[in-house]
Structures are given as structure tokens and as C-alpha cells.
Length: 279
Image (tube, rainbow, N blue to C red; front, side, top):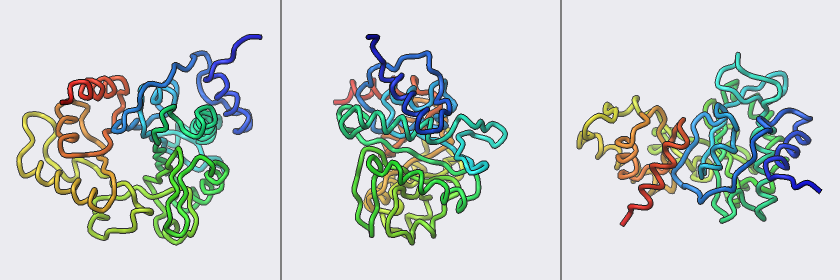
């Protein structure tokens, strides 16, 4: 009997669960997963040749997928004109993650490290979430659960970003996703089970772009943001940060939890080298 690779098994599961939609390239075998990188966030992950798998094979623990609701389907793309009927959230992400969780006895990574699936809603917030909610419920065995304010952590934590139906989600007694907050939420201090992550646009709050030392007042502001978020029990992420080690150095020194990148290998190499040289 011919051996079946893990990637082949995952693709077959994705096709079955997504109504025979293509789950991506099928001619590349999945490599064994490396040790996970807790700070690594795959920005616009679906633009890589092998969505999800390329990120996981670099050790990323936070993965971002943009979705549009089109004719009742949740399709993954950066722009509406780029949607394709075979590239569904289910086929590219949820079904493959569920197969990995099954393979690894309840976790995505063999060591049990949790994974964030950041779902960025690009279409109308309410209608898209109403289509997303029952889909997430199908994967409730692997998704972090929020029931009457009590959190049950599981292998994958789904967080809704972009067009977020915050009020509707706040009123739900049972959810399988939470909300990606903004810096203003640090002042209003919503429940952590609703908003566990604070994300915001770097150029909208800071002048420094990564050249030369960061001004002292801006670093103090950054550190204060992080400390406030951590005191409330939240993680911090910024987007539109330049892809430079000098920028990553500052973010990590200030305690920023997730570093986003479009260049998986570059950030993974940086983080592993930093980890190796840590005192």
C-alpha cells in the first residue's frame, strides 16, 4: 500500500468538508511542523502559495484570513474581485486545522501550542458574521469557547477583525470567536473574553518608521500601550509596520505580542536567531 502524506490527508478532508472545493496546491508535501513561534503572525496568509501550510511550516502561531460573503459562501481574498468559489474559509483553513488537531491529539502543533485564526471580515459585518457563526459551530471541538463570560480554551482561537459586529457578539451567551479590539478599547476596558487582542494601524499613532532610533517619547508611548493592555489581560498587535529587523527589535523590546509579516521565512529566521542568542 502506498503511504499517504499528512498534507494529502488534510487536502482530502478539506475537499470533502467543503463540497469538493480545492484546498490549494496538492503537489507539495507538508514538512514536519517546527517548534512554534509565539510572536509570529502571518499577515494576509492566503496570498502564499500554500495557505496555512506555509505559515505552519515556519512555526507561525497566528494566521490571518480575509473573507467576503458572496452568494452565501465565505470566500478568502484580499479584494472582492479576487474571490474564487474554491477558496473558502472552510477549505483553506477550518477543515485543514481540524485535521491537524485530530492528528496531534487535540492541538495544531504536536507540543500543544495554541493557534490564533484571525478572520478579517471585508464584507458587511452582520450578514457575514451570521454566515460565519454556524460554520464555526461545526468546528466547536477545536475552537475556544465563550459561554456566559467563561472561556474554555482549545486548540484554535478564532478572533474577528475588520468589519466586526461587536454589539451582536457582546450580547451572545455562547460564541466560538472573540473580537479584535482597537487602542480605544484600552480606555473603555471591555471584557477580556470579548476583546482579548488589541490591534491597530501603526502609522496612525506613531511617526517612527524604523530608520534610526525610535524617539524616546514614542517608545514610552508604545510601552505604555503594551503595559496597559497586558494589565487588562490582552495581547497587542500593530499592522502596517515596516518589514525591518530594526522595527521588530523595538516592538519586541516594548513587549508587543504579535509581529505581522508578509515574509514568513524572513521573520521566522529573525525570531529563531533572536531566541538562540537570548541570555
